[in-house]
Image (cartoon, rainbow, N blue to C red):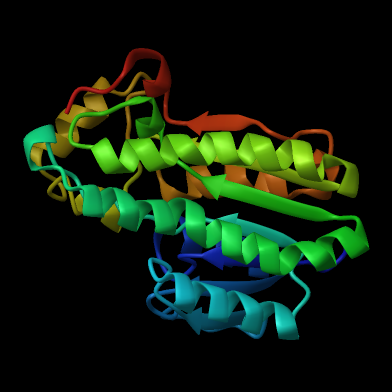
Length: 242
């Protein structure tokens, strides 16, 4: 029988995070969601916290509060923002904001959870990055910080391997979520054109990404660490026309 684990998911209230949260609780696993909003659904196995993860103080406080009351076995850092701009309009402030959200927040959350993971000699840390880490127009701040995620995850994988803790990255391509539609109009010609340019012939679903994350969370995946898995329909091989 699979042991009941507790997974902390940032951005668990919508999109990929919600799909993963539903998948886990349906299997009898406990989920702690942290985000700007609480999930619009409830479950006996779901606990929700509200926090602005672009704030260092709010992130530190919520991390300490969660880990004071719960043993976190798995941590999925899914929360993210794009803040798109072409180079002439890019702002250094955006880099700082996204660096805190994509790098600083998981650092604080993992630091709070790490003692318990080490004591149990089991832990799973999964970052949700992006194919845009390889470069994409209008993504100066986003691609830079997502690429940073890959380096940080590999560093942690080396540091934590002897403690039974794995650290991996799932890097989605174009996925139909609110973040995507915040940049590309929903059901537009641009969306259809992008779908035609994906080698597998469609845009991804949030369930596609949740499935990949679930693989890294599995107890049987303990020999896989420091890896980046592109869930992108092949766009990491050929790029993606806007």
